[in-house]
Image (cartoon, rainbow over all chains, first blue to last red; front, side, top):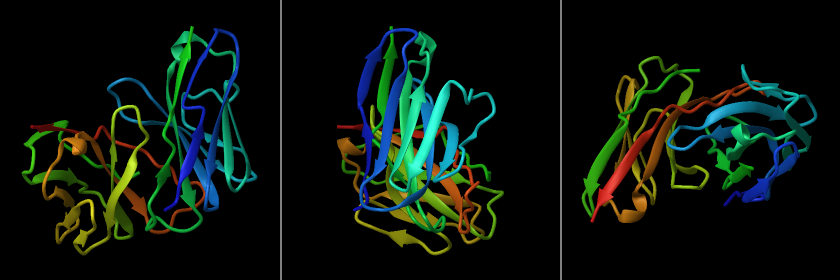
Length: 117
Length: 113
């Protein structure tokens, strides 16, 4: 079946540094990828929607200069948390959507646990 | 986005059936009903989806009300590994590049041994 690979699965970084998270669709072309953030005991919160070859669309309240998203190819999207602070510590999850319709399942990465010290 | 509402939590015993409800009273005619579940510290995984007719797969069954304003995910024999948060979401059949995908709070399913 279709697989979305997210890397790294966990990362610890110091405050002020930047962290890059990769999301790859392994056996299909993902025209759209979604990035979510999830705090403990809460639901997934959509951060941004990225379409291949164009700028990401960010949700209200999400700083685009802080959370840089690049979707340069149909199989890879990256989220860079710039100048990370402890409040950015969270579980980040990507999801890839095949080109097509809402009748096809969504595929999710296994998430990245970011801890900023 | 069409909104869905689910109970915050449900409890079941192992090897018994579980019926997880979802209300989506503002569903449009082209919305598919999708179910995903999320185990602790993992990304969500696809469970099942449907449009109008009931659906069965190896994981679960999906019962869709005739007016499509509600649906029920059925786990026929719950196991301890089914303990997860279950999300019901709606996806338009014709998604554009700008279509957002948001999640509600989901239902935390606890399975007792």
